[in-house]
Every structure is written in C-alpha cells, then in structure tokens.
Image (tube, rainbow, N blue to C red; front, side, top):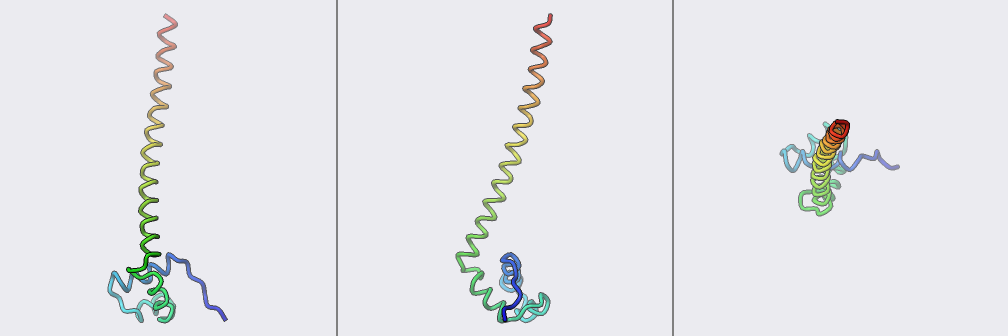
Length: 97
C-alpha cells in the first residue's frame, strides 16, 4: 500500500525546518502529519548537501531574476509606447499649421 504523495516544495520546506531552523525531526513529523522515516528519506534527497536541492534553489533565483527583468522591460516598453503616441499627436498638430 502506497502512502500519501507530497509535493516536492512541501518536502523541501519540511527539511528546512530541521536543517535551517533547528526543530527536532519528531516535532516536525507530528506537526506535519508525516512519519520520521519519510523525513529521513526526504533529508537524504533534499538535504543541504544535495545537488538536486541546490539546483532547485538556483532555478528559483533565476526565475526571480527573470521576473524582475520582465517587469522592468515591460515598464520601459509602456513608457516608449506613451512617448510614441505623444510625439505622433504633436507631429500631427505641427503639420496642420
């Protein structure tokens, strides 16, 4: 019989409570409703020294950076659109004189 499946983010956050915040594995297991065996397995897979966990972290950082850059470029585009519309209307006014 297979147990309940948890998302990868849930597992990583559970392990962070142990490794980064210093909680006992048994306390985290009780609070989250999982077994300590599951936490041990997750810690082996997602622990601080695991390259998979580091890859996810670096991907999240890259995603944050790209979202920030997209926001900036979108704002610049909107400003340029408004400027183009303004100068187009000014150009029409000057040709009617």
